[in-house]
Amino acid sequence: MSSRGTKYWSSGAIPLIAPEMLGEVIAAASDIAIVLSLEGRILSVLVNAGHRSFGALDHWEGRDIRDVLTEDSQPKLEAKLNLFAEGGDSAKPVELNHRDGENWDFPVRYSFHRIGPDGSVLLLLGRDLRPIAEMQMQLIEAQMALERDYETQREYDTRYRVLSEATRDAFVFVGTKSGRVIDANPAACALLGVARSDLIGNAVAQEFDGRRRAEFVEALNLRAMDETAGPLEAEARRTRTPVRIMPTAFRAAGEPLILCRIDPVEAAAAGGNEMTETLRAFFEEGVDAIVFTDPDGVILTANESFLGLADAPQVSSVKGRSLGDYLVRGSVDLRVLVENATRTGQMRMFATKLAGEYGAQVSVEISATYLSEQDHPCIVFVIRDASRLEGVRKPGVAVSDDAMRSVMELVGSATLKDIVAETTDVVEKMCIETAVELTRNNRVAAAEMLGLSRQSLYVKLRKYGLLSRDGSGE
Image (cartoon, rainbow, N blue to C red; front, top):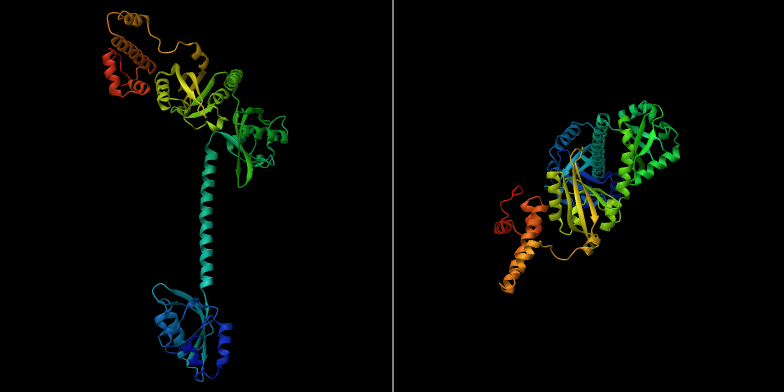
């Protein structure tokens, strides 16, 4: 309670309320109390001891209350004052917004009471509405967040439903723990010969001949966890259609689920099953390393032999990486391989070195084949370990007999310095010819392979009379 307020209440101006009881009344009945004349002048302000957040309001005393109200609250106050001035009375509370300065305002709900011998003074008992306003604001924000989440969920649900209806692939969602169908698209229902309402909730194993629930779900789980495992062969019980099931395990809202993509085994493909299995076995168990990449050289999959050469622990550790990461000359070798394979369809016996995860280098020979007649074109690299051949090969660069004889004829007729220079020219010419041949006359790639600038390579080609070759790679 302010000192000025205490002085006013104890002066005897309002003898109906004992001064010693005033603090208890205010503490119990209100957060803030204002003694107001019918004209709207503030006679005294008292603040509850537990609501000091209002600050000191002694400077309000003597002022017109309209000066400390917002514009939207002033008409409500005027209506109340006119009602009391005309002799009326009202117990209905009024919410007024106070302002004290530019940025500070707070809402208060007041009840109006006549006091004094002639009733010419009003006592306004107010309750601070800021906690309620803050709670309402939090509630509004939470409601808006829920609405946004609901709209986002509805949007994703619509996208999922449209995709499910439009796709030609048949798929079902299966609960890992229950083994029951959670959802299925129309293509899956047609393939299995059952209505969607009858399929959902049923054990997925019941839709295939000779399958038990626990064993079938376990088989789906094992194939979903093993990236190298093939699809699960089964036969639809209702339509007698042979199918392949390709499972993918994932979690949604903490619940483990399996997405089963179901493909029918076409009759025309039945005769090729044996060859498909043979090629798969060759890929998985073959001695030579086999790598499938996209047209940019990014690894899609690789067999165990490649993992052994690259010292990689598993297929997932190499998938998504560039094959150039495992070549000693990196992007230079990869560019030569990729460009020649995509331009001519294949490249044979490219000699280079492969670097493992821990820096070990192995001499290899690489053949590349570009498979363009696919939905997703790719390049197949067959990589053969050539480290054993390195031991039986003669060191250095193989020089032709004619070149060697021309060098030997210089002995006795030229100094050793001139003979060495002539030999260097012979070796340099052979290296350039080899690089041009390996790159299929792609001179940009040949320059990168030799570590020369493009201009230096042209100078040397002109020097050795090799410039007349078809320069398709320029």
